[in-house]
Image (cartoon, rainbow, N blue to C red; front, top):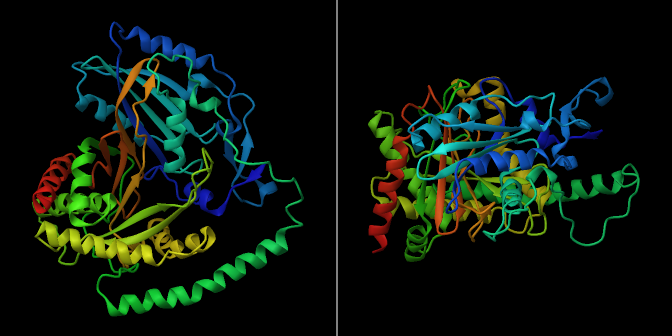
Length: 456
């Protein structure tokens, strides 16, 4: 039995039928020359035979009197792979529309808490001699960066390699010697003292943030976000839309404007949101505010379980009609937000980020989003993905798209993942609260075109 960290357990405490707390990924593969749908059946049978399940994927969540009501992990000694691994087929004509409809339904259902919290779906019948893989993992188990690294290790860079192990057999890699085992209670006083020292160092930083907020409109604090049609109650039904965009064009904008690629992603999202809200006569006068997660994992923190994420707030400048001025305002907002995290260690960043993320959790659980102030309007994440081409038994990965978590008060989530020369952007939304979310995709296209024209 292992107790969960407070951050990880929050994703179980906040879960309900209306807001499942799992993340996912959609991968589209091109079948190799001469292959047909039987290849996917063979892959399914081969994966089922890989019964050496790593501890990370054999644990299930539980709590009892013995854990004093806290969530903990228990080892499942009999993992039923036929439950976790599914084989499906799309209805004809097998377009991307049918694929996204299926993935929307799969992402709407809760994971079974009596079992390890993951599923993998192999989906055949996609037009163009393609198939898809949809993966689903509870956020208490792993964050997006770890999930992306896991994906990279479960595929091959060699199209001729066919013996890549299934992801659930993989064990986290360790860098350096194993730490000496000792009673954690013995190190508790030292750990507590170090934590108090770290928190004491945050006081001057908090005063600096408050001073910046008073001096400049570019500094964004929780509670400044306007009310919008995105910040309402949600249902358990999801609508998912996804598309790839040229990473080269995004880098061109970033270089020409002297900003980051993430700033360009935020500006694309801002332009699309502005257009979408105008179409619904629902654009607030004040600019929307985005929460952007920041990974706290190091390069050697590979396949780690749990969550190591901070957060910053950024103005999306949706009140600005001109795309160039909008991009400048967004870049200045993110620059100021990142400056507040410079020089802090992971514990300090986590504590500082709690001021951003806790209001969202409280608003969602207590329903305060209906009446009180909003910490932000939308979550926009950018998870770095693989740069080189990847393969599954010779089938080339041609598209990679993330799925994330809408919550009460946050009815749509925007998540992006880079792969090779493209940026796959996934929009995960409540089907009822955010109608026709697929229209946002053309808005992203138009917004990128406008930004390219700015630096041309």
